[in-house]
Length: 307
Image 1 (tube, rainbow, N blue to C red):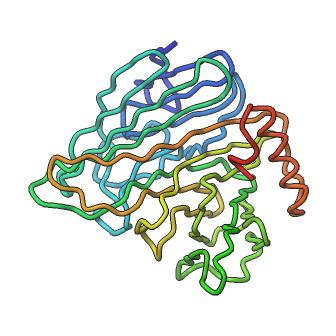
Image 2 (image 1 turned 30 degrees about the vertical axis):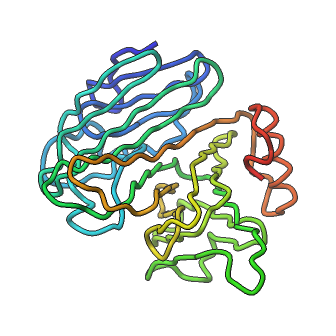
């Protein structure tokens, strides 16, 4: 069911639950998903406490939770404030958020959040609509800001391309190759969120498997998304990025770049799952694979969809 609730100081939020998990979006700002978790238990998404309940103004705020941007990143284009009320439509375990057109860019964002009838599955459909008068080249950029203290696992591409390279890796100017939070394995890249390290770190890579996982709070959050071969992606050709600092870790997926004509819409979907009673097994890739296989079994996913 869907109901109106107050959450984190925002008085106008919509909550949808199936008895196992619940999702809360706020309509006071956004579009933002501000909660996802097991019913009555902790939020797996980041909550930025000193921004609770903020509305209005011309300053862009992190807020935590899940947001929709368009890539490539540029200031001020990317950082258009989303601090005003957002119209929404409720359906059967579905909420559609339809904010106003961004005046500076001519782009209108739309987010549709759908909760499965049973289990923990959530589908988030992200749409960008060009309401301007000229074509705009961009990609859909979906960013989930995770609560601190967890460990992210990102699969590495394992396609044998012979004498040619088989993946792209992007590092930002502030990202040190020897940062202690990241482990570059053979099968996985593992990124630890460390509340004691404030310096930012960001990486991007080709994620042909179309999934990533975040172990935290005795559960694992998994998101799945499409990879489209032979399409051009932003940021040196990567479709998955992750950013971390002392209070959060971002799991970021990207669509291919597309020249969006006036009136045209582009879409990018993510599927979320939350598996309970799971802890990070350590950096052994064999142990990580075994735990994720068990997660697939418990959620009726085929292991081939993930591993």
